[in-house]
Length: 123
Image (cartoon, rainbow, N blue to C red; front, side, top):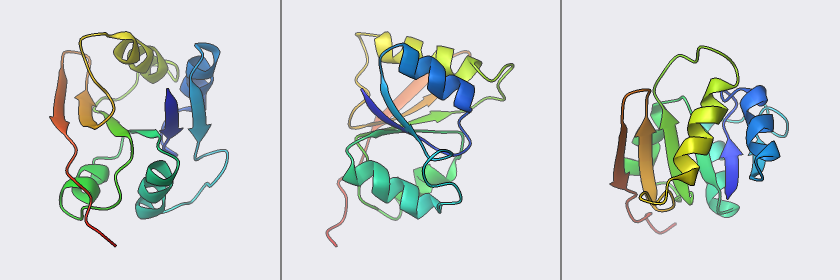
């Protein structure tokens, strides 16, 4: 899966996902300091699923109707270790009963919630 990891997603977890075979680009490695709007636009332009700990992305995609990334995974937890987000994300991506693309997915240690991404407004 093509993924864009927001700057707040640990690089140890990025590397964990890369070893697992995912195409992961990290904002921290190639665009540090980018605004949330820039990150959403990049994810949309590159058709990547966005990984983030930043709840502001919900407002950007649902209220502002910015260009839509392939999907959004919002992790709602304080990681116990730098690799824990990668482990949780990998497990989520391996589930066959969930669609990630076209969805805003919220995960924490106890549950997973999803809702469809809205149609982006025309620019």
